[in-house]
Each structure stands twice: as structure tokens, then as C-alpha cells.
Length: 104
Image (cartoon, rainbow, N blue to C red; front, top):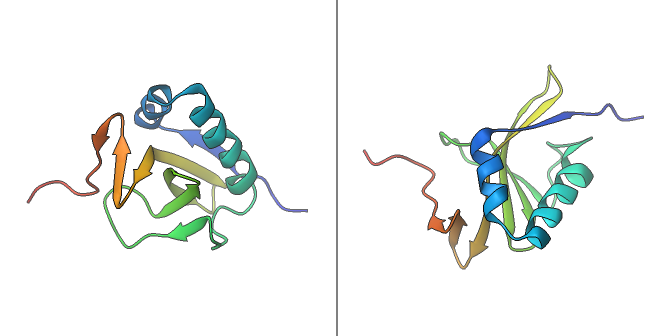
């Protein structure tokens, strides 16, 4: 039997979720449970390791929605950092285009 991971959602990601419609929120929350509870680092069509960045190490793809998250394997914790909607090649978070890095 696979060990369960605890799923923590940051305050910022909670705010991202509140910005979404009830339907979108349900898609995301169901996706967290289905895809991240047991094997959050098992690469698949939905789970992707990201290039190094200051936001998160992993991305979960749920239709047009994206969840950026980190995994602490030793502690068995998934930390959701950002939740947004993919529109074309842009990630929209709380109505704004999301930039993964700060201006230099």
C-alpha cells in the first residue's frame, strides 16, 4: 500500500482557490486528492517536474488549470504554492498574468 502524503495549501494558494469559480475549485481540489495524495513526484502527462525556479518544483495539470507545488519526500508533505488557469502560453492567477520570477 502506498503511503499518503499530507497536502498543505499556502495562504497564497488558498487565495488563488477562492478566486476560482466553484466548479474550478472542485476540479482542483479533486485533482489534488487523486494525483498528489500518494505519488506526487511520479512523472506523467499530468505531473511534471519544473526547471529550477523560485516558486515550485512541480506542476499538476488539470485541464486548463495548473497547480504549482513542492514536495518534501522525507516529511511526506506536498505544499501547494500557486493555483491558476492556463490561457494559451500564459498562467492567469487571481485575474493577473503570473510571472515565475521577480524582475532583476
